[in-house]
Structure formats: structure tokens, C-alpha cells
Image 1 (cartoon, rainbow, N blue to C red):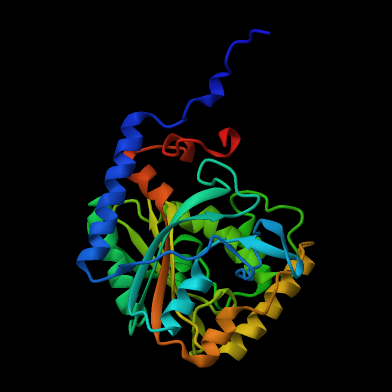
Image 2 (image 1 turned 90 degrees about the vertical axis):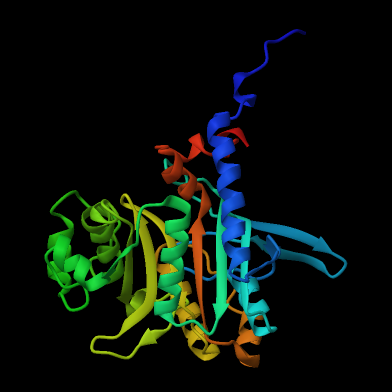
Length: 325
């Protein structure tokens, strides 16, 4: 029986955007190659996965001679790339696909392109400087403004995020729009994230790129915590035109601390009604053997293309987004 072909076989991005994407990818690889970085590849499907409160990986049941086992599509190549550092790598980068559930919208696609890099020996200042150089080379918008998380909140939300009581955070969060009813009143990080998204982030990177650094210690993820009063996480993020483009860490080296953070993240996931993620990984073995001091950064390549082309939605720079995959 004859039928007309459906139109959704076509790509959502036009050829101008796809050519710009390809050109930007060539420039990106040249940038790393000229600075002595080695391009590497690591598994997309792994028995290990990053244990994060907010990142939900896709799971796949793999049948092997030893029986069925759960593997995970990677939310980031972070664990495997750090294993390469422990194995002797000095400066490495990767352009890869990453997968995250429940991320779909103008700036999100469940499958996306991630650029991630690590350089042994770097402290946070060197990692921020390198990220700034890459941003200048890719977008040509001048050097980045460096602004502490604390200073940004004081400037744009009128409070100190590290010391303000919970009542002040809840009150500030309601100034612009109503937070979700599911927010627990005692969850400090949820209220901070809401204020950041609604009141601080829209101001960042408007005249030139902005790098936010020194996050609350409770939001360290896999970054080190610097022992100050109050302590802060040596974590930094790049924003351009109010869009978060990259996330970096002065990397955690202590395997026992990682175990405690994994347990805490799984407890938070349980409180959020999510399933736990496996806490044992080969990264822990790598850290036990000795992980060198390093910084690492993950950058959303699709968003980079959006900013380069002036696109308003991710489907304008991706050939086949989720609804056409």
C-alpha cells in the first residue's frame, strides 16, 4: 500500500549550522593538539557510572557467559579518563557522546556531545586559565571575568550563599518565581541551585564570558574542598550569555572521601525518590594506586555551537535530536 513519506526523516539543523559545527570541531581538536594534549577514547558503556544526585544514567542489561549484568551509558567519561591519569597520562582530551535521562529542552538532549579534558599538575587557577583560553579561541568574545560564587550571589541575589540561614534562602528564592512544591524546606543546596538558576545565572557572561568559582563545599561533586571558614569546593563553571557551558574541578584525590560522597549522593537520591547507583568502581582502585594532582573540565559542545551560530535551541545545531533519533 502506497503512503507518503513522513517529513521527520529530515535533520532539524540546516546545512549552514552543520558546516559550522564541523568547522568548530576541527578548530577544537587543533587547539588541543597544539598544546600537547593526546586525544583518547573510553567506553560509552561501562560497569561503572558517576554517582551524582542529579544525573540519571541509562542502564542496559548485558548478558554474558557469567550471567546478566547492568551496564551504564556514561553521563561523562570522567571515571575512565581519570583511570588514564592514574595510568600515566599527562594531558588528555576526548570528544564523545554522553547520555543523561530526563534532560530534554531548548538546551538539553538526552544524547549530546561532550568535550572533556584533564591535565596533570594543574591547580584550579591553571585550569580556569586554560578554560578561558579555549573559550577565547572558540568564541572570540574576549577574556573571561572571574567571579566567586559568593560574590555573584551577593551582587545579584543580595545574600551570602555560604552563611545565609535557610529562612533567608527560602525567602530569596521566592522573589522571582515559585519553586517546585517538591522542594524540601531543609535542603540548602536545592534552594541555592534555584537562586543561582533564576537570579544569578541570567546575568553571567552577558558582556564577556564569566567563570564562577569556589562553590559551596556541599556541591563539590568530585572536586577538592579547600579548608577555609567556611570551606569551599575548588570547582568552577563557565557561563556565556547566561548559559552554563563548562564545569571544572581541581580533582579530588582521596578515595575514602569519594566513598563517603558516593554514599551521601545515594542517600540524597533515595530522598528524591531515585534508585541508588553503584558505589564501587575502578576509579576507586585507580585512586588507591595514586591519582596525580590535576584539573578536569567538561564542556557541552552542542551549546558551544549554539553560541557560535546564535541558535536558540539545541535542535538547531544537532542533525537528529531525541524526537527524531
